[in-house]
Length: 315
Image (cartoon, rainbow, N blue to C red; front, side):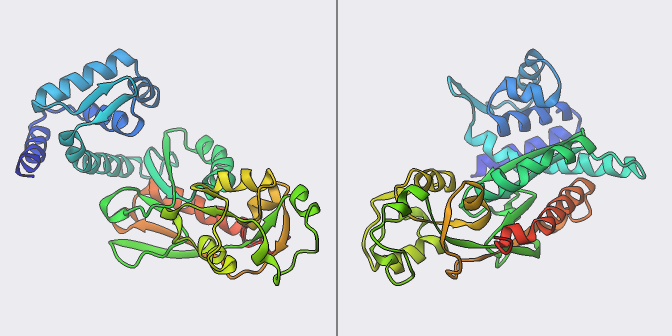
């Protein structure tokens, strides 16, 4: 830990004395985020040789190895991992200066990291991103998906669109809407049932469940309660796998209305008490950042425009 603290201190001193070129720090962050020189070069708009040269220059200035190279790409060393927060702080400061310089200019530049659920990313956010990117060609977006809790206070992300309201941290929270869930099945599965499905006989049906690490999800808890301890034959760890399994007729699933309907699945029961609030969470230090404001407004408007679709009220 003492060594890591010294490295961070050294990085700050070197940056202050201009021995570390800011372009080199940007290269470091791009490789850390994307994992390969080619991907970093594409985002930065420079050649791979330039990226490699700047990384070598940074490592030489710091006197440490920031990445371990292997066939899978570039992996952060322990020292490199410790330097990411400071490099991101320098990045945020650079963006802030750029935003001041832009003043009345409508163009927004910089990098914004959004943490959200896979379903919202795949079916709501990404399909609508094209217009935002066209309006702001110098804006780069990183989307982190999963059910694991993202810590904005630790700068794991700048903005989060999530279904769990944070209880602490230096964040600003706003409720945007509601995500509705129901019981869904494929036509082939439902046609083979011996009788009409109802709330009373769902306990006897096959359900596509969630793996043990995801048992905190409302959908997983509803299934466990409904089946009264009976195990699901198939467990998955992602929403896309849930949808695929239900479409394949392997059982019923607890799915968001808008995703299930768009996947051609039939609703067996619409109101199961699993609906979740959608929260927009922003790191408080970034509230006045123009690039963060632009992305936050985009997400807020997107949820508002799709309020009925997300809640399932139009089905």
